[in-house]
Image 1 (cartoon, rainbow, N blue to C red):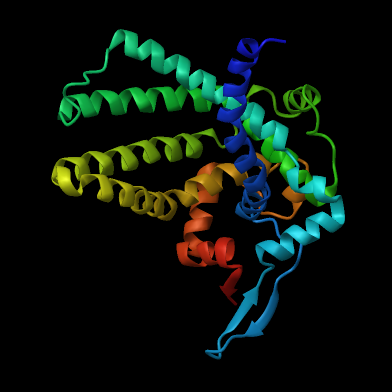
Image 2: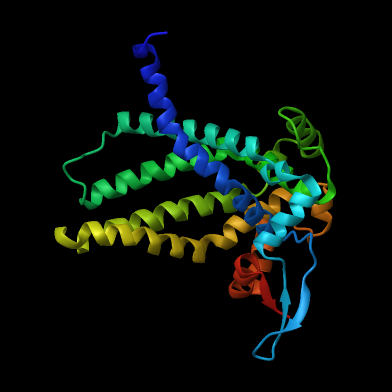
Length: 286
């Protein structure tokens, strides 16, 4: 086999090696955070008094959680739903690229006016349109994958496999079952685009050229924090609605929500700080 024949494949290998390795290393943590966002706690919390004399409820940290899943399902259990997430990302990614190409043909980008407000508005609208279409197309696969993750609680197999989960969900809920919780997910995606692009545009027009490169790099950290703060309830609502009323054991351990607004109000009623502490700190006031 000639060296020239191998060159393209070597390039593909080098381009994919780092992203694939990063994805495999990060997936268990992403899986555990997703489970906690659904308010599923297989290990009950314990009350204790902290150093300030206040009673708090301690939930398992991410390492204890991972060890619990490893004991239940083995190492492979930490990658539950991995192929489903890849399938969802591929479908949504190709859809987004196709919509972007079509919009760029209809409205060619103006590369000589990056800081122009009209150009910024047009590009932002195109990004929102492509994200919206890709989210709608990929959402049924996201619902199936989310329920596959939630099956950890009851050890069900209803949402495992390629085609049986879709047939089961259609028989149970019809077409609407594929899009339960879609609205908060769309709000989450649109707000992400508006906040990130808006902050980038603001900063790139305020800062001068000498400090721009360093500050734009810091901007990604600030933007990520802002998105996390304001959009976490919408992301969490979408995940909870995917599992609620699904018939899974995990659904029986959470409140029944008939509307996504009821779930969102419940999260707001609990308080953002308490919800955030439970998700990332594993500790909330009793």
